[in-house]
Image 1 (cartoon, rainbow, N blue to C red):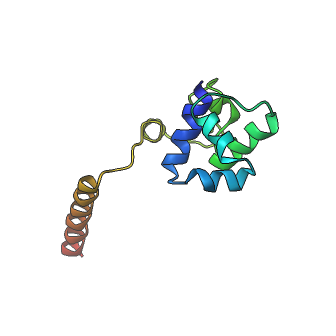
Image 2 (image 1 turned 135 degrees about the horizontal axis):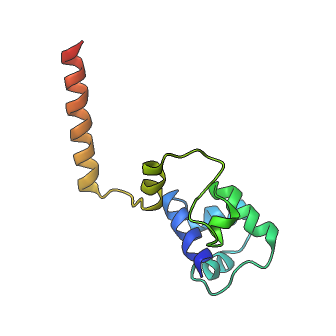
Length: 112
């Protein structure tokens, strides 16, 4: 059950379409849809490894055996927490971020 939720979350975070993932992994759209809805889990260890490589996470993360996406990467705690809970910003939030960056850039110019 965890596998489907995680691959769907990762695909959305990467802003990839189902077609894109299917093409990269050489699987049908029906198969991916069934994996994402947890109707099925891949029987092939190679396919699980392919998903992990595509999303740059561990197989343990995909299978729900760990909450650490990639233990090989030395992520700080706050970054790991951020990435695990990341939801793309809304248009309003994007505008707010732009305004904050503009203020920082303006302040930097004043200091130089």
